[in-house]
Image 1: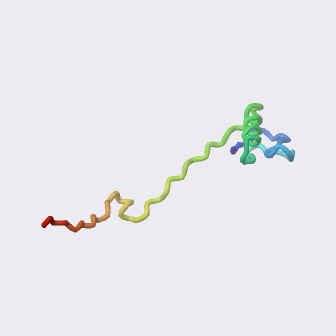
Image 2 (image 1 turned 30 degrees about the vertical axis):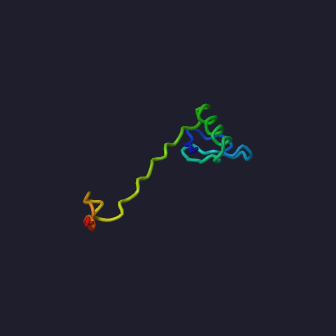
Length: 82
């Protein structure tokens, strides 16, 4: 979980190492339940706020797709019954 510090405090992002977490800086806690608990603890203590990570949308594959145009259809061969 990503957090931004609102105050400078001594804290941990991994549950093992204590260091200075600087006001205005963004930090990523370890990717585990422990990291989530640590981030929520900092937020609950009002020394940090959660950082919302924006979703990235994929870019269109071609200029035609960007313009909203569909590719030319491929004609199917017709089967005639005899």
